[in-house]
Length: 197
Image (cartoon, rainbow, N blue to C red; front, side, top):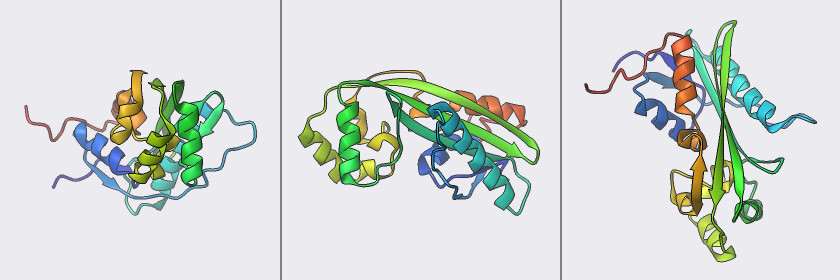
């Protein structure tokens, strides 16, 4: 096993899969931060702050000196931020508002190494077809919406709701790979290291 080049400050299996997809060697550590919104904070400022705070927390908590990568993804419908649903009714309400409409998915990624900090933001428009109340209830029963921003997973069963997408698919999943690769380059962290020629 090759030594890691970066610390993924997240327990997300989806983000781990995306980093693996582009051949990045990493260690992984869950971090806890206060994910409350600040009064008057815009969705773009919020998601960027979350990514930066996760990266900073990962850098501070590790025993080594790997650059720490933090990421955050949120769904925005109108000006309303949809995080992970609190319960079934919250998920059903989110899905009802997303049904037949276009929403934005904001995904920020940040890397922290001591005083060095950089971040990037990805914005993607996602259009949903109309979803029936019965489908929303059935989808909740699968368990997939419980830990997903906006109460759906585009990489899973929730893909059947997506009628169109403009922007970054990987950003909707949880880690925008174009922006991530750009940041990794700034910190001289190689990609494609495990891929066969």
